[in-house]
Figure 1 (cartoon, rainbow, N blue to C red):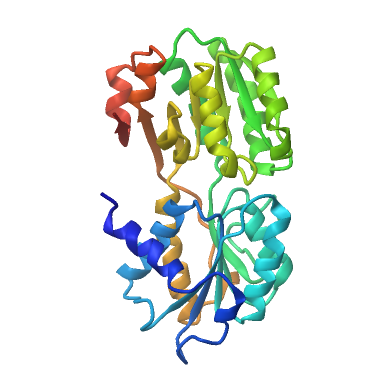
Figure 2: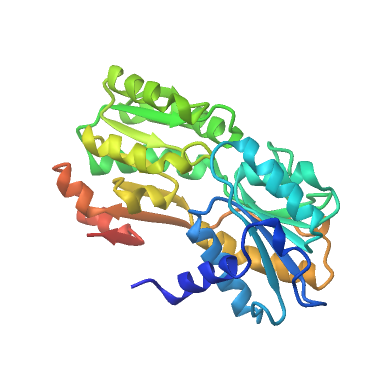
Length: 325
């Protein structure tokens, strides 16, 4: 059964159709939040909506939403971002790099609350302590803290693995930082690391061929605007070829990947709601420090482990925040 919070999260974005025809139909004097992100980002929307509800916001009474869900490559976020700006929403809440980058290009005036990896490297904020400008929010990235954990967890769950492929987008500065960290950590565990770059979803077949040609025995899939829309294909490839898969995005574990480990997207967006609240009450984004994750979520798909013939150590299962059976 779908949790009530999930139903409500769907509701706040379903109340207003995604077309531009809804402009101007909101009740007067109610602040409007513009959401921009992938339609599949249920966890993010759930966190934001739950946080706002706990702060006393009720859709249609003291807050309203305009939501846009472009799918596909980065360029398709530009139009929806510009549309939300034209509608003069009070706050923009973009989820992920392409949405946040599109919003940055569309306005330097409307306050923005983001959850994104590497906001400094992506030039969304001048610094964590003093973001400057009209943007602030939560950072997903502390690469050194969880990139190394990926190889450790894979080695613990699948001790016979010796070659790991890292599927990533080199245009993503956070993924690049993870790659640098992995290169130093994998050899310490006796693991050979293969870089498989994916700059465009159209090249996914070539990436799969590279993984197989490199004789990888497991795969790390970084979370990115390219990999998220094709997550089902990636998980299917891993299952078909009996490759343990780990990702920072728990969607991959939910869909059949072996493990996910990374910052809690739900938790970060839940906390981002407090920034939305502060800005609606007069705070300036430039004065709200960008916060980094303090908690990380471990999900183990025991059903997949059994299908792969793996016996997950009890110590690892006890550490997991959730075990999928």
